[in-house]
Image (cartoon, rainbow, N blue to C red; front, side):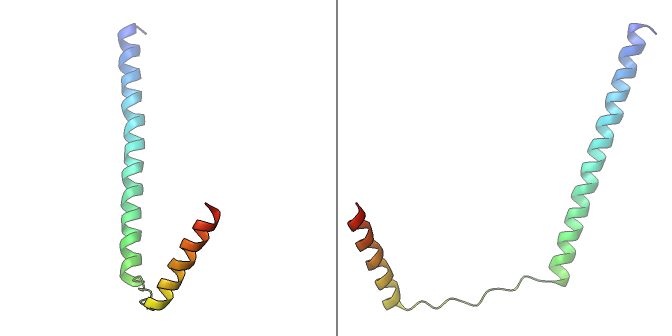
Length: 73
């Protein structure tokens, strides 16, 4: 084989290999999107119940955190 034939064959092999990898990645992305759509359709995410915070409890926690910080610094 001449150098030109070897170069063309290597470029052809490069194209086939990259094409296969690119095709597999596209297939993988498509499958993942399909699975995501199916999960969202048949099992929608449940929202957690809203957390009610008492302002007095919040003030107590912040005060305790400030006191602890001042003790250690």
